[in-house]
Amino acid sequence: MIRPVIDMKKITKVYDTGKLKVEVLKGIDILVKEGDLVSIMGASGSGKSTLMNIMGCLDIMTTGDYFLNGKDITTYTEEALSDVRNKNIGFIFQKFNLLTKLTAYENVELPLIYGGFSKQERHERVMNALDMVGLSDRIKHNPTELSGGQQQRVAIARAIAGNPPVILADEPTGNLDSKSTEEVIKILMALNKKGMTLVLITHNHDIAKLARRIVHIRDGEII
Ligand code: ADP
Ligand code: MG
Image (cartoon, rainbow, N blue to C red; front, side, top):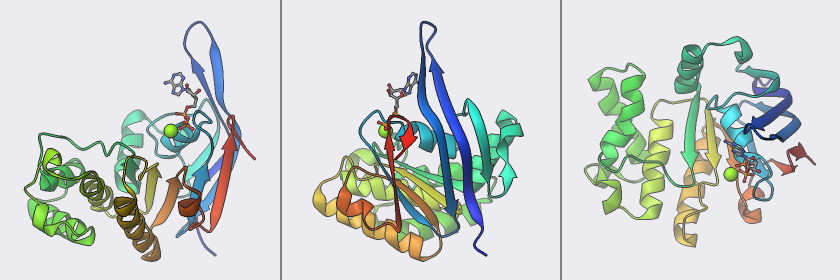
């Protein structure tokens, strides 16, 4: 049997801004199994990023059940959650979210420092990850010295260096030209082929169609 990695039931999220409460997710059920490639599509504002942030334990749902790798994470403390996040999830964002003062190498290394890896282990992992995205010759470059596509490839290297079972990508090609988009998608597909579970938020139908399953969200509900 293929193990469920992300098992969410009746997830709701209510943002309470003081004056008014907005229900952004209205009871989402989603099951992602090991090795899956799932695309999430939906209009801007439909709740995709909110859902992804909850999947990645960056945000907390209002109600619902969430089992991540079989563990009920609703009972976890903030500290336990950040540990789970570090070990299990690699994030890729539309705006890359690299630290501009650090080199490509240092950006990829940073989560490994938090993860408690030795210097030697970090070096191997950083070099492997940057090699995987074709940037072995750019390790000392700062993000400002790299193209958008290269920056996103550094961000992918950072996401995979800790070898997490799950990659969450929130419109990873949203800021890229078509050539860079192709490169980034090629890398993500290769990672999925190697067994990484991939959840991919995208507006692009051609990209979404590469997934075995497309989940459509409208106004906080799966349709
Ligand atoms: P998507 O990623 O599909 O564009 P989001 O998940 O970012 O959508 O946002 C869904 C809705 O939740 C939007 O209406 C947005 O305004 C609202 N929202 C997102 N984050 C917050 C927040 N921190 N506080 C209040 N409302 C928010
Ligand atoms: Mg979004």
